[in-house]
Length: 69
Picture 1 (tube, rainbow, N blue to C red):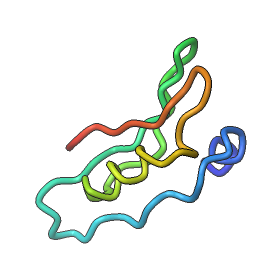
Picture 2: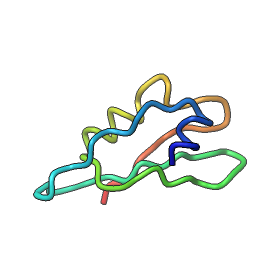
Picture 3: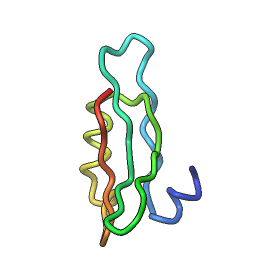
C-alpha cells in the first residue's frame, strides 16, 4: 500500500475506527482510465470524508473517495 501512497503523493491514511463504531468506510483511489485501488477499510466515515476532501487526495485523472460500510 505504501507504494500506491507514494506513487500518487498521498498523505498517510487515517487511524482505523474503534471496534464499537456504528458505521465505517472504505477508502478507494478512483482512476478515470484505470482500475479502482482499495486503500483500506475500517475508517470512521468522518475521517474518510475529511481525508477524501483534502487538496492532496486528487489530481489529474484520479481522486480518493469512500464507500460507507
